Image (tube, rainbow, N blue to C red; front, top):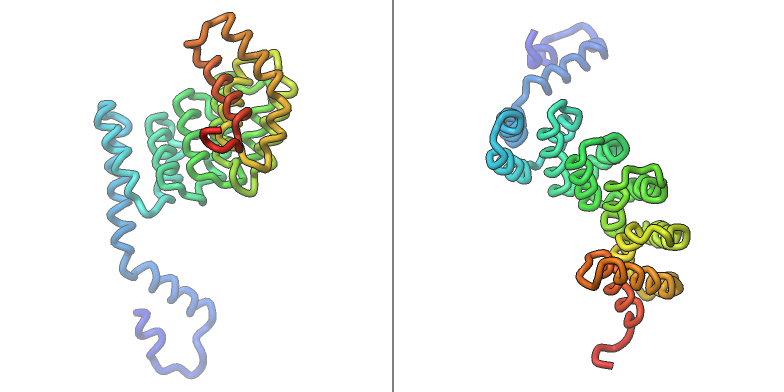
Length: 252
């Protein structure tokens, strides 16, 4: 029986509810499909083959095509693909699209990904999506000495992306806690100091200025060990200058 006949044929009583529901479902299933979704599904399907077997240049080109998608759910569907090139591409595109609905999946990858490039791409995406649900996870990873070292050093810059909104107090506390408890870890404190520069404001500058003596000590120690061309020393030096001159009128 067609959907049209179901609703137009003469009956001695109302159609059963279950029959009506079935008819609606059938009508939706047989209705015209979103042409944009159909087009993008085909794009992703063909892109998967390139990501799995193409050259690096071909994979890069495919990733760029994914940046134009409107249906981000087509990307999250492949975040558990066994091929790391596919996972990296999908995460990169989700970050570019700033898709908030992908935050739970990205948060999960933050704690489960073991591939270095995938982890770095997840951090990029989390910072771009900037969903506050990611902040507690980032803070926990940053403050845990057992976190993979490379991941831990990369977190401050991503965490700083959340430093000018509702999560600002959490970010400031995370940075001050690290500076207070990890004075012997010059490298980690150097990366945190870069995050400090990114979130610095009139509301929190005093919270960070109290660490100026410790930052200067670490800067001098690093300069003695590696010279003034060293990146870690430069991080400290720039942060110290910013803290000392923040709020000072230009030219004074």
